[in-house]
Length: 163
Ligand code: FE
Ligand code: ZN
Ligand code: FE
Image (spheres, rainbow, N blue to C red):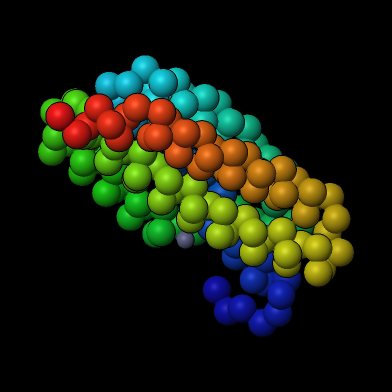
């Protein structure tokens, strides 16, 4: 896609995020199943529910602005999920895998935070106020998910993996 203006860049961000959320909805159940810590498992399951809503929300944003969503594959999310899947395939479930899964999940959240942060600014600049608010809502949820993962890591998962 040839990008010619900020509207085009926003359209690309939305397409990319749509693909990213879709891929994450498919990947989070496997990450939840691979977690030994029940707190971590619950956090992944909770973020799966949140992510399903985010997928609907990004579809609404696309509709609002008039963007065709299908066709683009977010290679960034694909790579992050591939690494997480590799960890799950190569390792027996234990506390060390929990720590590695938290780190992988935090990479995902940071990737999303970067993309949504940009999308919010572009939408504001272009006067798409409703879209900007919706994107900000998701951005806040990704931030909360990231903080919760830090809390779980510091709340015993890192320590248990030292044995
Ligand atoms: Fe998300
Ligand atoms: Zn991408
Ligand atoms: Fe997320």
